[in-house]
Length: 196
Image 1: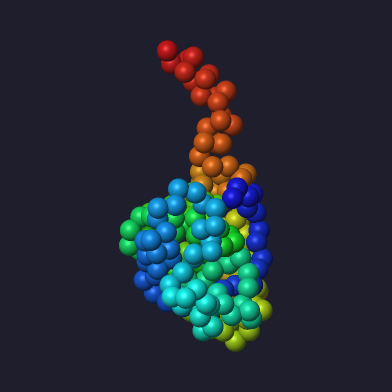
Image 2: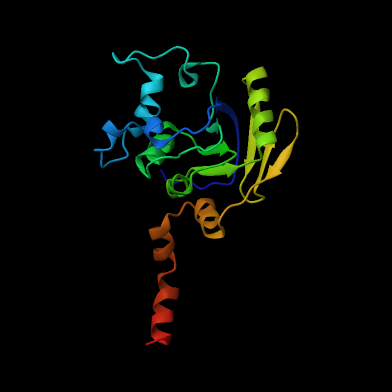
């Protein structure tokens, strides 16, 4: 879903597991879908539900004490195959931000293309986030895209994060790549006129 992105302050859902691959994010049996609709229902499907479809009470997404639009994940998030459905599922569930100390490159780009901001932080900062959220499930984190900062509101500690300038512009203006080209159609046509 296209949404303009500026500053987001939210409680978080922690997933302190390393090497979460795209098959865990969205199992392969859901890859036949050609539409994003309902994909969020199957996010972490095999971790969230028993075979009969009943929720697993010990999985964090089924714990009502956790909520928010920020997922805090362990190192090497989104590894494995390059399926875009994984980013569809994350966005479809309602996450706007995923924080980790490392993302697989293709998955990181897929998140950006689906209006989810992947924020890379240091290992110590990630550890602090997990500890703070575990101690107080109402801990809020502020992600400021214009300033490229992420702040643990409980401790006041902040870090800066990197983002491609083009993707930053697109997120802040609610544009996908095609929208950006259409918005700059006059510039493209002027360039073509000058360079015939």
